[in-house]
Amino acid sequence: MSGFQSASRALAGVPHAAMHSATGACLGVVARVGLAACLTVTACANEDGDSCPIPTEEISAIAVVIDSGWDLRAAIDFEQGDRHGPGTPLRLCDADILEINGEPAQRIDKATRVEYSLTLPADGSRSFRFELVRADGDPVVLAIDLPAAFTLDNPASGDVLMTAEDQIIAWSPAEPEGTINVELGEALGEGTCIASADDAPEYKRPGGVQVPDTGQWTIPAGDLVGMSPQACPISYTLVRVERGDYPAALASGGRVDARVERHVEVQVDPQ
Image 1: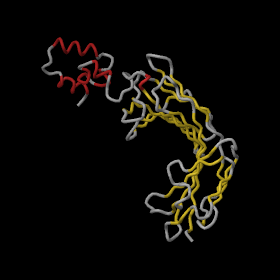
Image 2: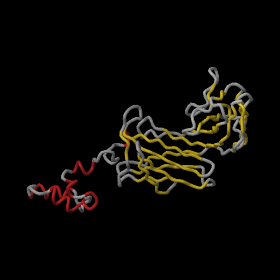
Image 3: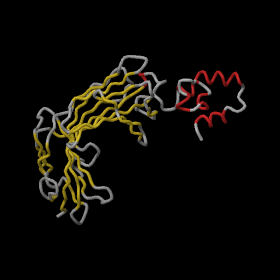
Image 4: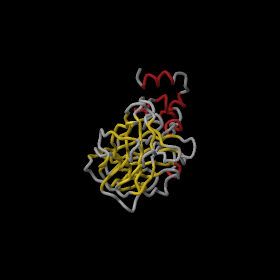
């Protein structure tokens, strides 16, 4: 059934004057949403989760740019509120125009948010600018540069590591004035392969352990404990993070991050 057929059924029995008023209020949107959805102007302009009726100062944004080593991906999502409690994920209405580096962003509807993204080749620009233009005010800009890229030199993919030996992690180039995060991960469905000793840093927690960005980090023998009777897969992820300036025009609770991530999969021998 078409939108106009649905509208005709929904309007059966509505007085002529009321129908004329509703029709006039909705001329600009009737072709898109159907006349029945426009019986009140409020229903047309304030659809749940739509950004148009929300003042800019009530909208928070999280923008993240990631250099994965094979591409550069920028993504942003919007929410009504300050992210400190239950909020309302927002999708941008037609009047709100978003560009990333001057290009239209791709909308992706996810389970808990609506994401807008742009993907560039690995050798693309390392400067990113998210610009939101709203009908009722000045453009809102979130800008950030990616940190310096690096390579993960050790361990190599497929290496077999012994928990009874020091684990040496090396990357280049270093950024001695900064920090880098070292995180351990495990394959889903493979059971628990490795754990940190009771008094050792917890490399498996989300975000891992922040260490000096000197180009090398050693996990001492015994800090990692094998939990499987046989060799099993784990991954090392190194992340260099930069935090950008968050616009005062938006609601608090958002952020602007740029990350360089490098990942390698290895085997752990519990012996």
